[in-house]
Length: 147
Image (cartoon, rainbow, N blue to C red; front, side, top):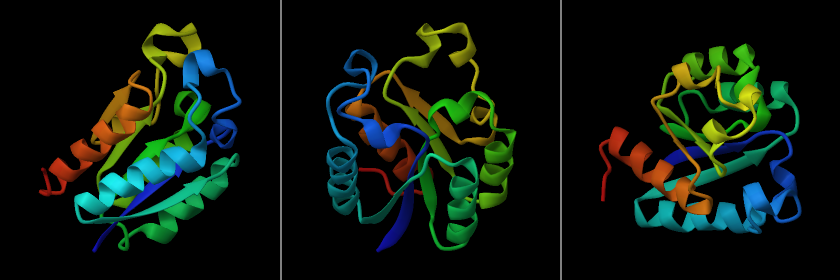
């Protein structure tokens, strides 16, 4: 089975409790199971990882280089400041799709620019949990594994 990585950045471990207006009420384990389930239907093994630490996300991308065929990444607020994560995405050498639960383009001005996005093969935002499934479908297409 083809392995893909699902990475979650800072504060996403608080899903279900954190600002439901922007992030909804789904918990991180529920979201991960949603993606794993659809991933299995598409022939993917989905390996999930969350960290509040930028370096841990970089370490995981490096560990999965050559092992995972692609990655779904919600970098959280690191999207707006982490050139380190940008470089790690480039070094990963496989497609990465950036995903956000909320519509960051319509939130605070500082959230509107993602410095990791230029390193990614695509992005999905503002669709809540369904956006993760859209991002998975996009990644599947990039890997030649569409519906």
